[in-house]
Image (cartoon, rainbow, N blue to C red; front, side, top):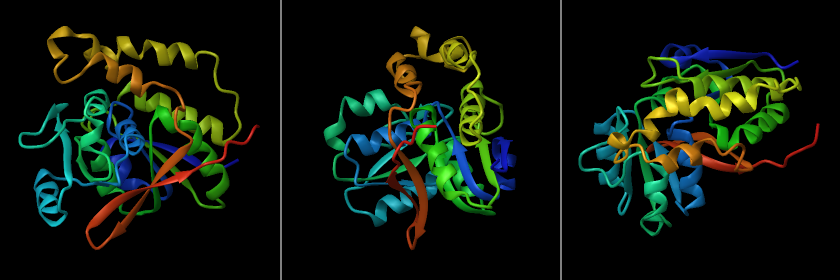
Length: 240
C-alpha cells in the first residue's frame, strides 16, 4: 500500500512531504481545472493580494482572479466563481490567470517541504489518485484538506481526501460516499443555495464543483523566475 497521510488546514500544508495534494473543492482547485477548460494559457497561483498585483504588472494582459472570505477582491477581474467566469470565458482564453484564494493557494505557498505538488478537487479526484499510483513510488504521499479559509475543516475537502486515499490504495469506495457527496449542499455547500449570497456564491458553482471526476488530468505545480504555475498533465484512466 502507498503510504498516504491525510493532513488538514494550513498547518497540514506546512507538514506535507513527498508527493503532496493540496485540496480545495469549494472552489479554488475546481476553478483552476475549469480555467484550463475555458482556454486559459497558464494559471499562476499566488499567496497574497499584493503579490498578485505585482505579478499582474509583470505579465501583460494577465487576468486577476481571486477572493477573500469568498468575496471577489476589489480591483480584480473575477472572483472565485467558475460559473461566472464560464459566462465570460472569452476574457480568459489565451491569457495568463493570476489566482489567489483564502485557502487553496495558501496551501501551495506553505507546502515548502513537499517535493512535488498537485492540486486536487472532486472534479479531477480520480485522475489525481491515478497519478499518485503511477508516480509516488516509495515516496510518502501527503493529502491536505485545506478547509474554509485554511483554518476550519470543510466536509467537501475531507471527502475528497478520503476518496483519493481509498482509490490510491485500491480500497472499496464506501457505499455512503455518493450520499455524502450529495449531502454537501446541507453542509459547507449551503451557502450556494442562500439567495442572499447568490452574487458571490452562485448555485451553479456548487454543481460544477461536485461534478465527480469530470476532468482526466491533474494540475502539477511548477516554479520559475516569476513564481508558481500549474501544469496540466493528462492522465490515462486504468481499470482496477
